[in-house]
Length: 358
Image: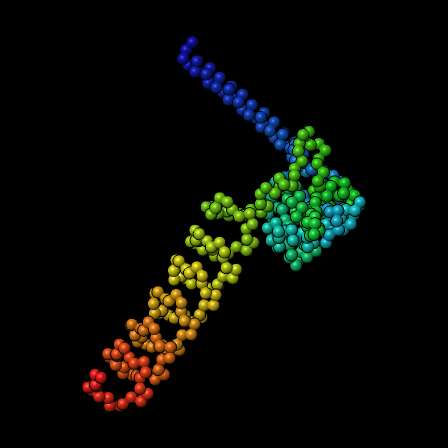
């Protein structure tokens, strides 16, 4: 057989292999797409719950947990903004409790909109309305939330402060019984989440607990820090962090910081080793040029009002307890070392220059 015929057969074999590979790939893709379509339909998968549309005719449907529906919350206790429905249950969709939960969860009080990642069920992104005057009739309404977010929002509604009792998502039957109908937000004609697990869940699928929904922040920052300052962040961060933090924070901060720090701290502190016991009543007019770098340990509590401008370099160790009220302006340059203990009351104005030795 010639070389040319061998090369032709090899090329044909390669083309047949490529064609078979393409058919195998297309079959696999078709299988995967079919599986995804079944998953989107809520069939044979973990994480599907019943949803209910009320309106003129009550309808149930299956919703995968990543799909987005409206939120109505239920409670066994009466609460602000909740209306009574069947079997001692109360339901609500908006009001002060929703706004308080919105702020605690970090969404702020104004209307909050986030683009959803899953399939949007009734148009658009997740939306939690706030205090806007034009939306006063819809204060706190929640739209297009996935199942986890809906569960967390209801669980954040505190219906009784004393016992810390929280609301919850309604069950399918509660919504079918009419709980929440006519309470606003336009939810009557929309599908709403329930806690009822879909009937066609795969055997052995565990129910999704609310704790599993709160493992991460609900509204993460869009611009996280590139180099976080610590690997052990605080569990209770401040709600109002400083807008101008120090660029060079202390490596050993004080364990007892002041509760009322000065609003105008000095730019050039005097020392890196401040006094351990500072005065509680510092002077409002400190001296600009202090006289010494080693001040006295026991300063007088009654300093002179007119101190000498040229103090003696060798002051007396035992000064007189009754100093002269009118001291001499020209004191003797060589005073006696042993002055008399009983000096004359009226000394001579012309004393002898050669006094007697006896």
